[in-house]
Every structure is written in structure tokens, then in C-alpha cells.
Length: 111
Length: 113
Image 1 (tube, chains in turn cyan, brown):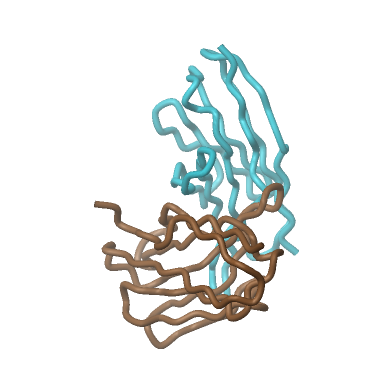
Image 2 (spheres, rainbow over the protein chains, first blue to last red):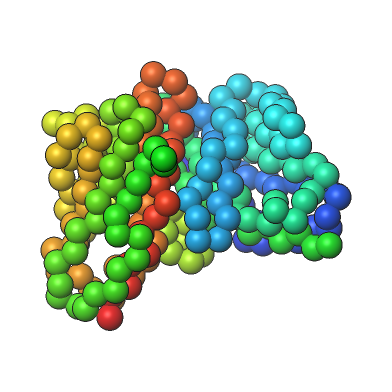
């Protein structure tokens, strides 16, 4: 199976750091995406991890541990505009390679 | 101009009506997808197409059909709309020569009364 689990909602304070976790149970893992989605808008690509370790892009970083079936998205120096849903999506090798999306984590940033 | 466009952006219709949602892209990608998004359920794949002659069912294809008219166009039809098809619908494209990252259109909010 490819159960993908993320917390439903998280809250954080402007300027702080927040970590959004994603766990997955799947065989044939072939990559993990993180997307950001503001309310009523399209998801936009943030990161892609296929190897273990940390990928850093400005204020956002994404980590992957394939052996643990675990990823996190780290957001630093939070801004109000970071209030959004964050979607974890897992891609399988073989077949179509189309990623399966988790239900998303709604992040609320307070002043 | 947006790379992936969807029309209409909003639609209210009645049970039993036939509805077509259209998607166009200027990214030159071969792969196109249709998803629906419901509160608390995330994005679920309806249909996908890897090229003009290729159409495949996704996780929730019942009640939907698609047409890939050209590389740049992929339309989704609801032959006889029902209220539980009320949702936000997204079209997406991807380029299999890279990480196959998906790029989404702005969405169509469909309400079936």
C-alpha cells in the first residue's frame, strides 16, 4: 500500500521554525514531492527528494529517510504568507510513476 | 500568461446535466492529468494521459470521461452530473524528461445542485 500520513493542522508563530512530517508505507519508492497550496489556489511545487538527506532552498528545506519511510518539510523564519496547506506526494517506481498525494497539512501562522 | 489554464473557473449546474471542463497548456508537456480535491481528502486522480493516443483511468474515474484533443488540450466530462461530484477540479501537466514534477492549473470550482 501507499498510505501517506501527515498531521491535519499545525499552528506556529511568525518568525519561528516549523517542521511538517510525512510518513509513508510503500514499496518501490521512487521519490517524494512537497507542494504548497494557498486556500482556493493551485498547488505549487516546493521540493523533490529521491535520495536520503536534506535539500535546502532558501527558507524551506526538505528531508528524506527512505529506510524509515519518512520525510519532513522545514520552514524557517515563518511569514504570514506561509499560511497554507502543505501536500506530501509519494511516487512509486514501476507502472505509471504518478505520485499519490497525502491529505495535506494546514499551517496557520500567527503574528 | 499562465502556462496551464482551465475553463470555466466556476460552474454551478443541476443534477443530470452534462458538463465539460477544459484544460490547455503551453508548457509543451506530453503528460496531462485531472484531479479532484475535496475538503479533508486531498487530491485524487481521475484520469491521466501520457500522450495524445494514451488515456488511463485513475483512482476515481467512475462518472467521468476525458478527451485528449491535442498535446496541449485535455478535457474532462461529467456525462450526468450528481451532487457528490461537487468539488474543486485541477488539471496538471508534467514533463517525463525531468523529475516529472506536476504543474497545476488554477482549478475549476464545480457545484452540482
